[in-house]
Image (cartoon, rainbow, N blue to C red; front, side, top):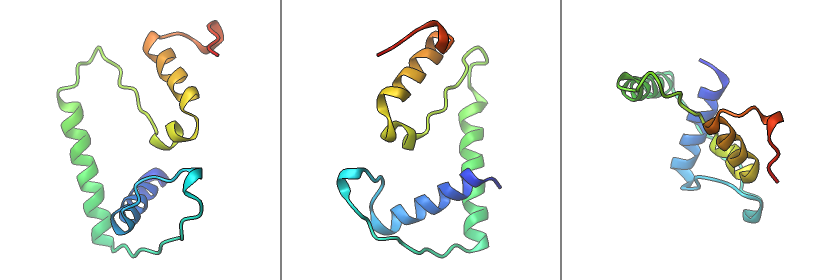
Length: 100
């Protein structure tokens, strides 16, 4: 299992516990939370994520390249991420265009 997966399950469990699904600077300090995860919870979550990806890709058109977006990156710098997505969509190398 990779770091992103572990971050994902921890983030999800904290959000389930606190009902806080994102954090931005205007929210100030949010107390840290401690959660406990059993091996079976981790394995179940892994299987759930795997099954969701299988469902998504099973009928995905081969000619369409998926674009993966990190929600936290969008919150951190929305303009930069929109620029990145537009460039990918248009299949343009970043050095060829300047977006302000």
